[in-house]
Image (cartoon, rainbow, N blue to C red; front, side):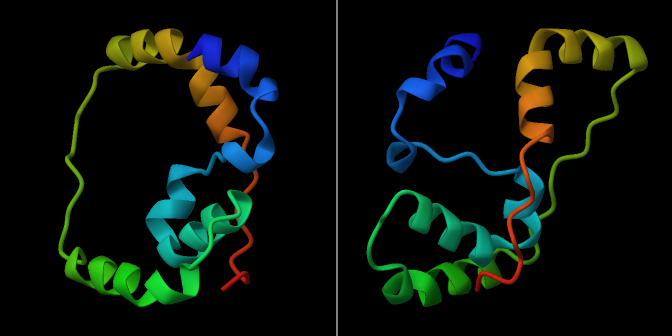
Length: 98
């Protein structure tokens, strides 16, 4: 991840987009539209209903639950600190886009 983060500025913005997991989890369609727009991908309007259908199908999905002790949390954070800090600092996607 460090290599990606140290060279991400070399990637044209039209070829790379980052989103917060929380945005994708809570506003799937808005987030997907944002990704399509940032990557200049055509056809979002044509596939939007399929995305929506899939999201409805997944409505009962429940994320895995993990219980980690503080030492493990600290160890994970230390290993992934750059990624966690970067992704936590991403701006929230404007929910009024869709």
